[in-house]
Image (cartoon, helix red, strand yellow):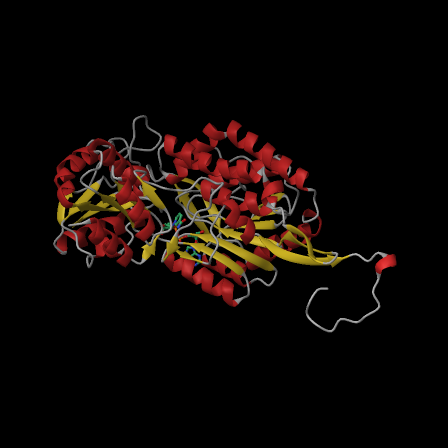
Length: 507
Ligand code: NAD
């Protein structure tokens, strides 16, 4: 992998982007960006200094003064160019993403395409950001709303979607007229930086988009910075709660999308082949490192008899480096993540769950150093076990049983997370009842990973989210703008009344 482009400094560290320039950081601390299949160090992510964070925010603040008044058509055309550039560079960026993150090439392309769809939606910002108008709310009085940008917005992103999640954030924020400071995951910021470079090439002016790298010190500096107006966070529950609290205490608008434990409820009338294929794909795809992965299966009634076939499907999945043809499951992001997943698998066995398939100790010829965990299936799980209560974030499916749909709904609703849920059935009545009674923000009906397309919004709920508005779609336009309501009366000299009105009524 070449690190000779303008995105890297002489010591292979990813540069920062401040005021339109890719600059080397003066950091004394840096994080190795490692290929999870080989342990090759691809580059380093510096931990930006306090002065560098200040410079990025100052550049964004200064750029806001003119960018906020840039015509809508100019902003839309930049997004149109960005979508073309991303499409042209897709295979190249996908291979960088696979190298630094580990997922398969096909999934890396999917990561970029799901983000690209948000850029496409941002091309419609003209209609999305329109206000409302009511004529004659009183005699000669009109009321209308303006949706104005709010200033410097910050994005803090996780390792698992280094393309899609940054693209959930900066295109919509910028299209609304805000300026942006992005803090990508220090584990895999290389593909993110390629997208950022394309944004500059598309015409995003200096200072409108800035990037700083680092961990907690950088995140805390951004959450407490007096010139930051809003923060979008996506990542773990522990960090997301910290960011939400710190940002809110400092007067920021914050949205925090966090951890998950997504259930797939299987009714005995479901189409067995489709259901088992969907379950295996959603539980083990991307090595289970998706916030919308199906990590819990709830078999209702006789559908539990399908478990052996599910295990056969899981066994048939090929574990290998993401860059190799035919790979179904790539490595997990780091040795630390691999250790944590393997430790949780051990607790499941210790706590009495039946380990039907054990993915520990998988060896991949040619990639012996990789962070591989094979598909793992537990049966006989109860809601007290750590493999049920904790997000594992690996290719591990835990299976529970319920007697009825009512019991299954109660089980899902008792779990604190609320990111996603799926129901497999051929009964419209069961599906309708489920969508109404289930207390989870994103519901799939015979769809295992129900991530909404960008003209809707991402609507995870309860323990998976803090803040009321979600990423992308109409909700994020609300998040990235302030509504101003104008009530206006224009006097015609011939009809001016001479009386003083001391009431609240408009007359
Ligand atoms: P993470 O919380 O470790 O990191 C997220 C971001 O926070 C990164 O930019 C990281 O540098 C920063 N960070 C890490 N530790 C920090 C600290 N102590 N203080 C301040 N900032 C810190 O998350 P991750 O491991 O990169 O991503 C996986 C998690 O993200 C999973 O829990 C997954 O469910 C969640 N996720 C949620 C969604 C969603 O939409 N709900 C989407 C994707 C991922």
